[in-house]
Length: 307
Image 1 (cartoon, rainbow, N blue to C red):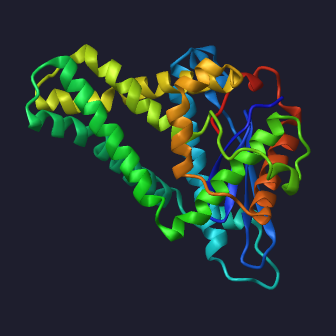
Image 2 (cartoon, rainbow, N blue to C red):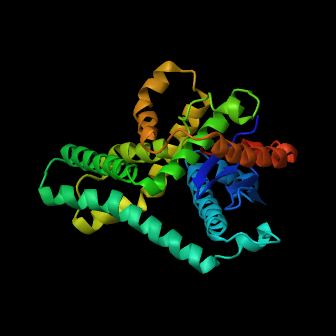
């Protein structure tokens, strides 16, 4: 069975396998358009990039790059007017330039790092806590609280409700596929909108693991405080990736699932029950990826992705 992950986009879903990804979008005229592209992962070319933790950093970078490209494609489809002759998928995918994508990528990553990494550290330093253990624990609590509040606030925005529905549609389709069920909207609808490999759970565990990693560095001067929070992010992300990957492979372990329960609960803020039409879009993207992955090599299939 091919390991599949995905992401909600505007009026659609992106699904990715080890060597291909596809995005399906509901167009303004009601039809479903899809675009697919191959993944040339360094993990498939060299063993160094498959070393634990390192592979997590590589996978995260790939996921961000693919996610932004898929979001750009869906944004172009969502904005386009109905045309008499339709638009070719290749034309739509190039409407946003590489420069625009890079700028959006930089702004989003910079905002997240400043809000969830640098700001909690500076706030804790401003409070004036002396002990190393107390410092990293309070910093971690502030970071997790800010993250949960952020998700809670954006979950109330009406404009994001449909994105969260597509997020749930992605989870349901993957859950049904992993259960060996027929990929039809009515069947997929019965499955859970929660998945252990979800990116929401991944982000939560990035923040929890950071508490233990930062404990090794104590409470340095403010400039080293900021530097460690930024420079150690890839290491922390790699460790969180290994945890989520392990959880995805042992979903029947009740003890493990109990430990990971907070990450699963948090997904309730970023998912909403999807409609059958939305599930149809998610299934289209999933089927497209599965058909492309039919010829993937055994070596390539070793790469795991998040849902």
